Amino acid sequence: MKNPENNSTINQKTEDSTPDSEREYQKLEEKFGFRDQYFIKNRIAEIFRKALFSPEIDNPDKSASEINKWGKIFLDVNGLKAVNDLAGHRNGDIFLDRVAEVFHEDETIKNFCLNKGLFIEAIAREGGDEFSFLIRTDNEAELRRNLSEFRNVIIARVEEVEISDLIDFESEKVREGIGEIGQKLLKEARGREFKFFASISGGECCFFEVLEKYLNDYEVRNGENRSPDRIADELMGEVQDLADERSQEYKELYKKSLRDSGHAESVFTAFLLTRTAEGKELLHELMRYKEALGRCEKDAGRSYLN
Image 1: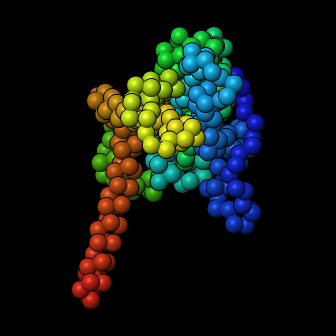
Image 2: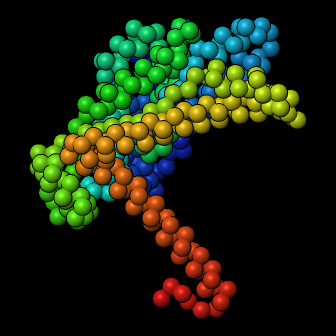
Image 3: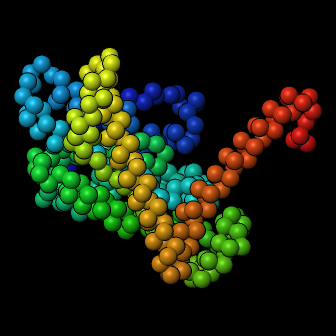
């Protein structure tokens, strides 16, 4: 398993001007050697550009073979918002630290890659709770199946990480945060004995999947003023979007499986994972509503917000 160098293109800020949360992310990057999201995007575009448009490559079969070696896994950590909201961002950073350690140190993941002939070219932070694996293989025929199995291996290993200690479920702050419904569900889930584990959703994309779409789309191939750079960037975007879309599908299935499981622990976990997302969406709705009222206030010359 390859541990990428730390040569992030993220602009480094001074100690005094860097927010605490961002400083913690930088420490995480320094510790585990993460690339930033722009490295992954640029690298994907570069792979398409070299394989399809390099002057040295004039054999279509050779170009396709190069594309067939590459894939991306997109991972979305579940529960970070719950930890941040209930226990603070510093504990959220510890949560990410534990998940990141699995990516780089877990022996099951290393052995799977070794046995399946997968090479992790880079692991990148895509956002606060999002990561990407850039994967290469010499076993082109099995890439799709191996990527899917690898995604499942990562998910299973992350689910072994307990994060119960990061949230004091008996504290007044947390009990107020989860409300009456949450307290009832927590009681059913055995209160202090409740164990909260990490989880992660993932989606994979083989590069040849988007290349097939490109080659079969006459309008795309023959669009006006499409330079090799633009085509490579478009293919890169398709890889990003497809992996992300599949990750979101798995995430919804995961939450539904928790809610429908019938086990009190799983139902409460589903409550923790959804309450924060729903709360943030309601907050966004409220802000949009206030903005709309603010425009009315300006137009009508009177305040609707008091």
